Length: 135
Image (cartoon, rainbow, N blue to C red; front, side, top):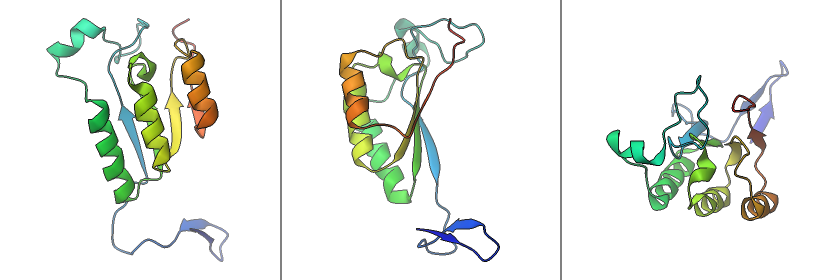
């Protein structure tokens, strides 16, 4: 799908001209986090979420993934809060990886357990981003 132009620059080809494609997107699965980093604004505890709305269900995230894939999205960042606080994270992650996205997982790494490590090993993201702010 990439073509190299005469001037050496790469461009995506195979997409109809005149249409806008959302090349990348971020899915903030939850505003909840298990850390309380002072500089972070996405760090609610579970009881506070209801005051601001609700989290989308796994099925809703999967449908949004299908819509994003259909629209031509290539890169997808999965973030939060801390996305691994969701019990249904494995289901969401597995379904999104099956859609062919180039996935970046943004996590504080503190909730990586054997179940999530096996999932990531089986379906590795392009990148895992983490910070040490919580430390």
